[in-house]
Length: 116
Image (tube, rainbow, N blue to C red; front, side, top):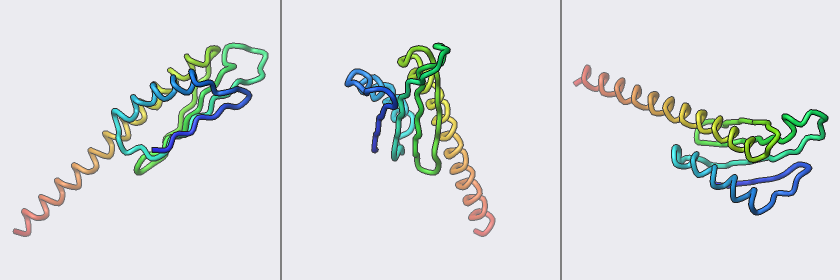
């Protein structure tokens, strides 16, 4: 798994890097076929401070790419919201692939039973 953490108008400190990697462990617990993860942490130059800090993430898993972003006035809260969104997407993707594979197995067994 390749992991890239970068910052835009922001220096990625070791504390931020450690926080992001600890949160990303949740994704790999649910789904072990993660190929590539790119995280972008951004500080916007906006007058409104509510959504100034933004976190984005592209996750490439076997079969598809997942994307999520979250904004908050606190960067750590934005990272938490981002990981919640990604966690839901990964779980949904995993259940879809498992359901599809189970359906293929059922149809294959039914076809083999009809022939034999």
